Image 1 (tube, rainbow, N blue to C red):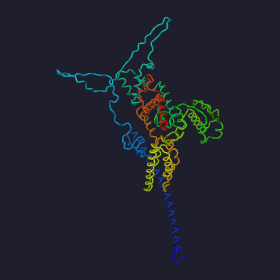
Image 2 (cartoon, helix red, strand yellow; image 1 turned 180 degrees about the horizontal axis):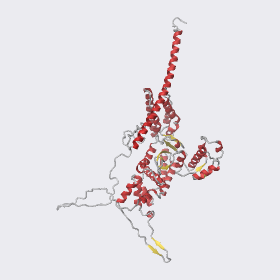
Image 3 (cartoon, rainbow, N blue to C red; image 1 turned 90 degrees about the vertical axis):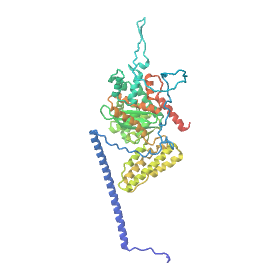
Image 4 (cartoon, rainbow, N blue to C red; image 1 turned 135 degrees about the vertical axis):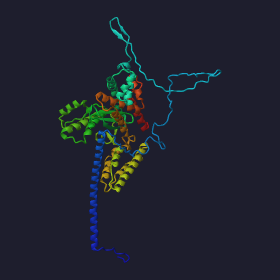
Length: 554
């Protein structure tokens, strides 16, 4: 060793032992801190549960006392940026632009008004137009006098009513008005009855109920055809459900839709079995085909039951009773096995009906909706972060950091939707891993939330393969709100016909709106049977094909 090199200092043995003791003490304290942190998080979670329970009990007390509680509305910041349809500098929502008030003004009556006095020698200088829009509301009763003749052979020949008057003693315009007021304008049945009575319409409460609920087979058929056409030609659908009371019992209403249609179906359950039946339009086709086999593959079906099944395109049953008889004949009686095989058969029946094999389904993450190529809503996923409560300033900073990065990433996804490119996809996928692949020391709950994002990566990034796929489930939330408003106005349903009529008519109403068709004109066309409004499934197919041609550049 050269003299220029300094010798490293040698610590005495007592100092070395002291350093080692301090290090052991630090490790013990770190372990204690970690254990205390776990205890704190557990207590905070328990405190949060108790606070939510207290809030629930207070709400129940307010409900019993008929007091209105203060609503807590926490808007999501995920959609704080510009929407997909907005350009830079545009601050108004779609459809809010001003237009001429008399753009489609048509003159139905013309009245000429002369001055009270005209001085002698005055010359006529033309007319000054002053337009007034008015409405005629009056009862209009018709008596058809059907001529009757007796032929030489003794047969009777009678004049025939016009086809639009074959449905009873109420004309198509009156029937259309009743349906429009109830299903479009949300006028309650009691108020509608009072209004008609004041106008001199002789109608009973029972007759009004029949007009609103009974004999809607043609509407039911068209609504089911709309769903079938949408499943065949759409690239995606969204879904959600809400409570729906029927005959004094709690039930559920499921909505399926996208930008072109809305379909409602009420039932007593919201299970996977029920959702598969809803996708079939309320019918039950049981088919154990290749799609059913693929559905069963990851499920825990006992080997002895699987050996009893044979897979083909044969239709095994079209009713729940016939299907139960088939299961009993195959020796499948276990409750769990019956559930799994029934789900598989309903899924096979669904896929045998010309469903788009690339159809994608968007939901809020409820397990019963996890079918087809399933995508998740970013707004619902982000709520897991908003529910976190940091116990220390460091934890709160970590949560805020992840939220800010998530919102920035969400805006990048929205930009990708407007201008999808191969380079954008290559960039966004690893960015997801960088954002949600982090691990934060001493914040176990945040790490659990991030792990949940990583586990559902494929379901959150369907937009990269299909840019038209929405990032959120607001469309389904908006659709289901129609049913919620109807429930608040008219309460639950009492008859099966009334329940089905409500589902069908409000579904057709929203479908007409999405397709740009007047619901009033739709009702009149169907009641007059004149074909003025084409079948809604045909319009939907046309729009789907046009959208496909636009996206592919054909």
